[in-house]
Image (cartoon, rainbow, N blue to C red; front, side, top):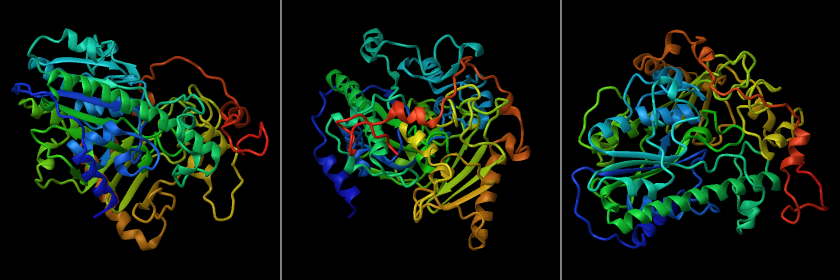
Length: 502
């Protein structure tokens, strides 16, 4: 019995108070809790030794926890469009980009449920960032905006089933430096991913990220408590997850696991036994058809598979998952995308970089948004790695190259022996057969789902899609960035005050 299984059993047994009894409705409510930039495995139930996630852990204990849930794209707007539409980003036209226009050619699950009598709403970050009004939406596609869940419930017609989207902005940057360590989390307990340098400043940056995960978890728990007090907890499907990976180099906006592999727990007593663990692959396009089916409705526009048969133990074709990205931030001269497609199974991750001559993290000087290498959010971790250009250390990865250098047209990783995807095997003849098999799988999926890049891998379609914001940011170098973000005493462990994190 693994430590993960033991922890899950304990959480299942001590899962907290039971709700008041309430009459069972014919259609379940749906509460969708989505974080902004939270990676697997950063939750207590997954074994992270630092971050405290009692709400997520409770949902896992009382429902199902997923170990191989993947966002359709590691970028906010396309990920959220895939959730709402149940369609892969490349099937959503302009919606395959960040800061895009929301596609309005197929119904969202919110629209379908609303037409069936559901009361619908959202708060904070719904679909976006981008422009939904340009395509005819009056409200955000995630639902009519409300100040909070209470305001939504106060307006809900008596007896109506509801679907509500709680879109936190945690743990998106920017962070208030030292918030994590000030809550008692310890630098020495942090597990630093292998593609980051391991020093106190990086560890502290991760603690600040953990602080915001904990805030999301705590606020989600408050919404669940409202359902308990109303007596409607057990007739509500609760989904808790994130849109894409952590806002660090080689994570968010990348097809490596820390960009695409998501925490996911779902609670619905009618369909899910407590303590269920799902190891099969799940993609975010699966949420919308699951919600539509749970409401007793049908649809014919979605690419995802409903999750309920999988959760019931029925075999589905879930031995791999397909991933993609197009233009994230507008950070290359000419407004260029960085197109990627990938297939991930239990042993390997295969990535195709369609235009490897472009900069995967953005141009080294500012184009329009974010700053240097602008597909990576600004942070102390980013600037420290930028300072390491050309400064490799024996026995250590080349952190700068991993984060910012150009990449070959194909990448292949053995994710079992190389969980941080540091060693590209695509050029190793030993893996030629594996690479060819993965390449064929990916190509077949692209063709079957109508991906333009199946026939035109160097298409300029997503380069030319409107980029909705108009702001321009100034450039500044890594030294200024380090000064802005360094740990300030007394929280940093340095020989004397003012030593930067180098």
